[in-house]
Amino acid sequence: MSNSSLVDYVKISPNSSNPRNKKIKKITLHHVAGNLTVEQIGNIFASASRRASSNYGIDSNGRVGMYVEEKNRAWTSGSADNDHQAITIEVANSKSGNPWPVSDKALNKLIELCVDICRRNGIDRLNYTGDASGNFTRHNMFQATACPGPYLISKMPYIADEVNRRLSDTSSGLYRVQTADRRLRRQGKRRGLPSLKVGSKVRVKKGAKDYNGVQLASFVYGRTYDVIQVSGDRVVIGEGKAVTAAVRLKDLTLV
Image 1 (cartoon, helix red, strand yellow):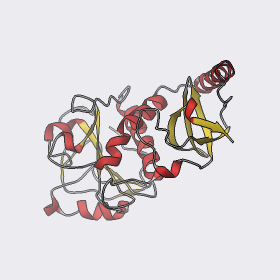
Image 2 (cartoon, helix red, strand yellow; image 1 turned 135 degrees about the horizontal axis):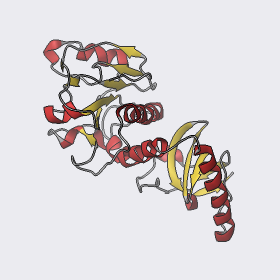
Image 3 (spheres, rainbow, N blue to C red; image 1 turned 30 degrees about the vertical axis):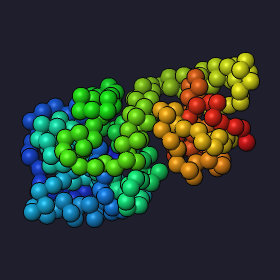
């Protein structure tokens, strides 16, 4: 059982059960409730009296820390049964207090880390059901807590969608994107919608929501973004290669 190659910092916590007694088949999300670095998170989990840990942590700069190896069960969710099956991830908040937001760098790295975990552990896709029956879960499904906070809770469908999109990519991925791009341009001409392609510059219409119906952050409106991927009426936008959101074609205007 391997660990992620995305790790920037390692500080192994004494708070774990070694080894885990179940196969890894889930990912459980948490937030730090503060803007801590991966080193600071590691220092908290280094105390045996804390009796808490996680497999990984991500800070606001998108750096990844490892505190419990994947072969071992971290003490994270208040549920031994869940933690024996799950890789647990703590994400730092860019600001304290509701809605406990996280930075774009942290969110993008979280998606990347989830993809890596799934690929190495044979998880075909993340299924976010909104309850503990899925394999993409959150802390407050197992314990009376507000963790991982309203912001990350609202982003969980989007995270699962992005992870699954990347998991489905194969060596023919570029061909599929190009095919979808051509199909989208044809649809746009027929419907009078913008003729978008990968690399186009776009703006999001004020008041638009993301592809899963979640309200976008106010700063998204009015800024110029790059089109990263197109598939049907779903358009992934961002800055360079950093994903900002997946939105619907009708909610975009060409720059």
